[in-house]
Image 1 (tube, rainbow, N blue to C red):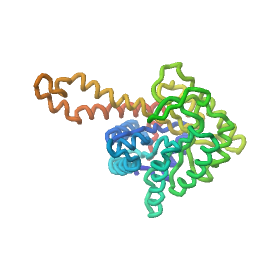
Image 2: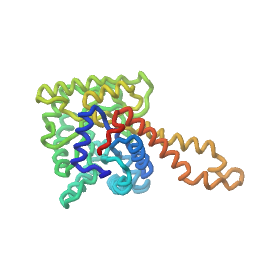
Image 3: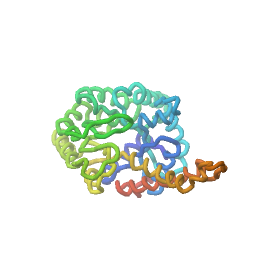
Image 4: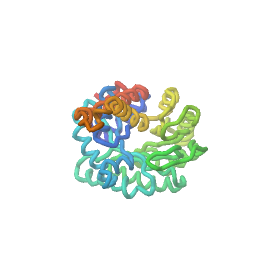
Amino acid sequence: MPIATPEVYAEMLDRAKAGGFAYPAINVTSSQTLNAALRGFAEAESDGIIQVSTGGAEFLSGTTIKDMVTGSVALAEYARVVAAKYPVTVALHTDHCPKDKLDGFMRPLVEISRERVARGEEPLFQSHMWDGSAVPLEENLEIAAELIEKCAAARVVMEMEIGVVGGEEDGVAHEINEKLYTTAADAIATAEAVGLGERGRYLLAATFGNVHGVYKPGAVKLRPSVLKELQDAVGAKFGQDKPFDLVFHGGSGSLLEEIHEAISYGVVKMNIDTDTQYAFTRPVADHMFRNYDGVLKVDGEVGNKKAYDPRAYGKSAEAGMASRIAQACQDLKSAGTKLP
């Protein structure tokens, strides 16, 4: 069962929270980066989450087509075939979907899953993210309440964000300011608007200083204790311990102790993109520099077909990315926890 069913995905999330670990959620943009993710999880003996962003979905459909739904469906169908050969279980997820892309990305994908479920099949993806961080909280929660109902009908988990992740991803940029820290009042309003699981399961990306992309130490101050404050405030009001299943966005450059502290407060999923992009590209750059006269037809020579065959550097790229994912599994304590 390499692609998780809704029941298995729920079990994965429950096991992570109870066991004090989190799953790496790896952004992919191609069949090759998908294969690298599967390999990395398998090498670490960890289950995991594979996800695609709006930009990644456009890219997957072809650079002249740029259709997010087509790219997403193609990735999911390909994943079902190749993942069957790996001894780990993965869930498929779509990443940040802002308001202006709901009708071209998340909503049609949820509808595809609803139609599949109506036919007695499994949903196409296991979870989808609504990113309402750019709109007022009231509007964010109104849309979340509408979407969680649709997700529940499609047997998929919704992810939502309150607060703002700074930096830039897929052309969406946010400033680094006080909005990077979610408040207890925001968390309580979220629980009141979308419930705590009774209306449909969801993951919550609450912010505690997170920034997308690469930044130098000291540029951003992460405060994982914010997550404890949110869990405690909502838990006290509704009588639950750690009521939220939390997501860690913008984690590149984070200290290991910050990651572990966040996990201890209920983080079950951590998005990883920038680090794996570099891990994939670095071996390619090394290959090109070392074999420049093979990959280029210099001074009228013919080059070296074995050097410019995409498989030559593609194998190194896959290995590099897989190694970084295996390290992420170690860092998030999911290594060796795969479902039996």
